[in-house]
Amino acid sequence: MCGTGSSLPSIPRPTPTVSRRKNTTGNRSDIGWKHGIDVQGNGKKVKCNYCSKTISGGIYRFKHHLAGTKEDSEPCASVSEEVKAVILKVCAEAKEASLKKRRFGDDEDYHEQTEKEKDNFQQKGKDIRNFVTKEKGAQVQSTINQMMKKDLKEQCDQQCAIFFYTSAIPFNVIKNPKFLKFCEMVGRYGIGYKPPSYHELRETRLKKAMTNVDEMLTEFKAERKRTGCSIMSDGWTDKKRRSICNFLVNSPKGTIFLYSLDTSDISKTINKVVKMLEDVIEFVGEENVVQIVTDNAASYKAAGEKMMETRKSLYWIPCAAHCIDLILEDFEKKLKDR
Image (cartoon, rainbow, N blue to C red):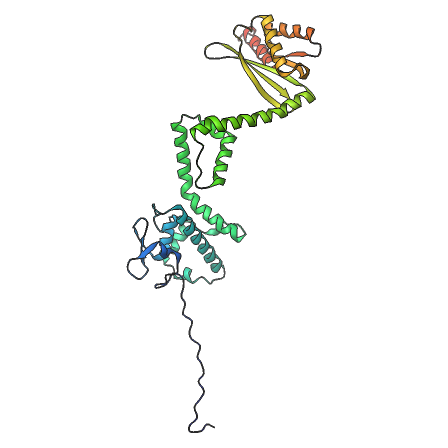
């Protein structure tokens, strides 16, 4: 029972929660608003601070305009790479969060999308599940890489082709593992890489490359002393009809090139061939040479036999490939067509 002057105690009623999503009208906490201006005051049209274009569809499409994803908007041509990377990461994280909500049926933004946006999303195949990994950090990074590489791959390929064309570089250079390694290293370095200057390329870098080769050859020389080696000669004729002979050294470590010699006035005279081969042996070290391999020409054969008489630890061997070539030539000359 209540008296006349008494009053009922007031019971506080719960205040209804008002949803204030990040991109709703009047909310300017979205990072995209730092780079654009609300044209109509309702958040539906945003003017870009960099290219001055007006993007319809709200801050969502405007961020994709800055990120250059080509998702429902034209990429901005004037935005800096730093801003582009930041916005691209935001878009990737938002898409990842949206995907997780969809899996549990709790994505409000997704249900509020227009039918046109849903169709475009499905047609363009932007589902992040196609190119993400299991770890969260890797998911975001994979999404960023996918979006960035989509436009840059075509541009990089075309610029690479133009470089080859304007420098008259043979196309088979693209197969060189060293070129592929160079591209990989540039990718690891990232934005801002500058190639060596003309002076560095012909002086500093060249000397360093020669030093590296010398260090590598030290290992080959040590292998020669331990196991012995074979000297191989490879004769050929250049465009001026000169006889050129390449000399190489083979060991269990591998084969390396020594030098080339013009043998136009040497290859037909036995004594000159002997002197030429002895010079190569002295260059490598007589104590390291086990055998010498030349073609099966008469002068080389006679020189090899003469050297085995004077050097008891040395063997001369004709080149098997040249012997087979001579056999096939004899077949061609002596066999008659039937």
